[in-house]
Image (cartoon, rainbow, N blue to C red; front, side, top):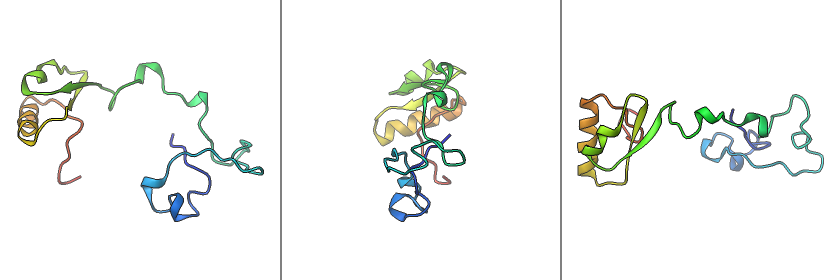
Length: 114
């Protein structure tokens, strides 16, 4: 569930039509219905919304493995996803090519269609 700040839909500076600015900020107003957790007003984060321990530190349901070079791709098994470390363009292309050959999912690559 995505929690958004109060009145984000009213003002451009709070995120109206600007996804990047839509983030959670606690409402502090004295008469704020959202702060008082009134029914039919947007919910705020609370302990009941916490992610289950079994899904913690996962990307798309898979455990991430940091990959620095082509050799380290062998550590990525079927229940894991590769995350390319901070490497140069040449090495990054090598890793991506090898990963596509062996059908290993890679998380942090940008494709032109995206």
